[in-house]
Length: 510
Image (cartoon, rainbow, N blue to C red):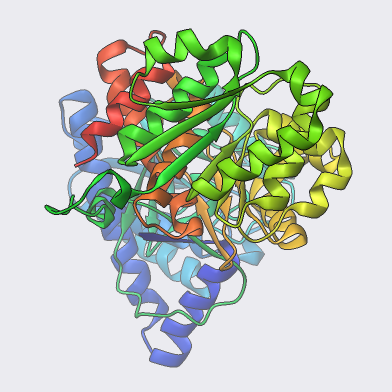
């Protein structure tokens, strides 16, 4: 796993390095500038097939130490033979001591230093730009000459833009655009990636994010929530199949899903659970789905019921549901269930009678929203997987408000109900009961298709069947699901990917 931090947490790490350990801030700054210059030159060469020194580079500096980083970058590029000039933005009386020192060095070397506010200084053309206007501490909307400078970035459209630490105008914790933001091709960040470049919309402004090691000492006493994401080496967590195993060794997954004409959701969840490694998968569904499911997935066991009979004989239906819950070691509840009295009863019976992990998805969540008393049955063995629309129905909040801070929305619901909350979006957020927040860093826009959520629910269930704790299965399942979608999209294309192909790509996890 890879750690992510907010701006506040990064300030604590920085302060610890400088004031407790005693590393001079200028030493960290020099290392940061070297890392940016190195990565910028390599990226420019890969992109354009020529060296950065064939281009003209403008470095835009704010009044703080992010601006000082920019001035140091300009000096390093200048000494390497590049054509570079500095553009300062904002009140010069507010410059930090480090920025004053770096600007003085640049001037001594003959690097042009201009003021953005001066008439005519915006007309000089350049091929590449460095955004060193704001660091990770920005928490209010950008105004004045800084906002004008960001607009200038948009209008100037340099061929290549590098952001120092974070694109200016992006909130380091939520990814929100604070009025206006620089759109970078590359962001070189220091020590740890910032949560704001892993979450949208910030992720869309950051371009490729490169995390540079500039020598921060280990530090884990920071305040606030713990954010993380997965990386390829985490694949080693998936256990190898035991030689003496049998089908019961790897769990029994019950998929309570599918209404009349909606067997696809049940199929996709069941397929994903099997592909993820579950030993036995049973689908609890309506009788009309039997033939299609037996054809699509003959490996699945079927338990069938009639909605009419369930309404007519509720005690018999309750006994059936309780019997199936007793069989299962993990349950997926909701994909394609539709609406109706029997759906309310099914959700109630499962939540009340199951003592195993339950993944509540899709129409299971809609039932909880439609019948609020069902929310009282959500307990610590429950994982919910809403998209923003379903989360809005559960909480009564507007979708736009939820998206302002997805992590906060997921954590709040998790803490209120004691559940693990997987809030699905372009960058899915998982609020785990252990307090950690996972930010999804895999996947592709090609996965924005019907059935993707059903596959995710089955993936999480399959991991639990393999023995993963619920929290870990939820967050790791999101990463594996996105990874599988990206791999499948390489074959099927951005528009052609099907959810079943994502499920089948889970085979390629090792």
